[in-house]
Amino acid sequence: IAYSSVSEQGGDLLYVIDAITGDIVAQTVADPVFAYFWSPDSTSLAYVTTATPQGSFSAKQQTSGLAWGILDVANNETRRYANFIPTQPMIYMLNFFNQFAQSHSIWSPDSTHIVFGEQISPDESAVNILDVTRSNSTPFAIADGVIGIWSYDE
Image (cartoon, rainbow, N blue to C red; front, side, top):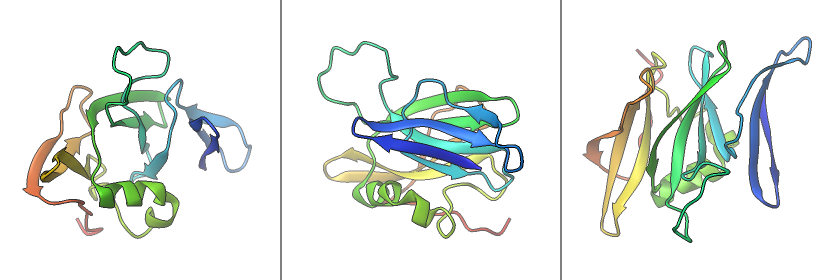
């Protein structure tokens, strides 16, 4: 079972607990989590966090967007990926992730990639894919658009 809480300051850590014992199996360490999605094979969670890691210094006063993270449940390890500015439809999906998670998959059926909408400029947006099997992966655009959804079929 995965859960997080939300406080007045925003997101909180993401926890995965054993459904029988209630023991914590995995958790994020410092990233405040705002939305998360189980991979189809149930080995990982993709989560959205702030672009600037908590506890780090940024000379910029405003946020530089969001970032994807992956929590590997078996190893209790996290990986962060490049920052992005979500499109309006992507923001809507992230705000209501708990309602969309069962019907709108951001994960590829083989649990190796995620898809998301990014606002590149005020007049340009793209649908990006991110390979989450590599720690140094960067997203690449596959089409102009505002949001992407994977089919459940392989």
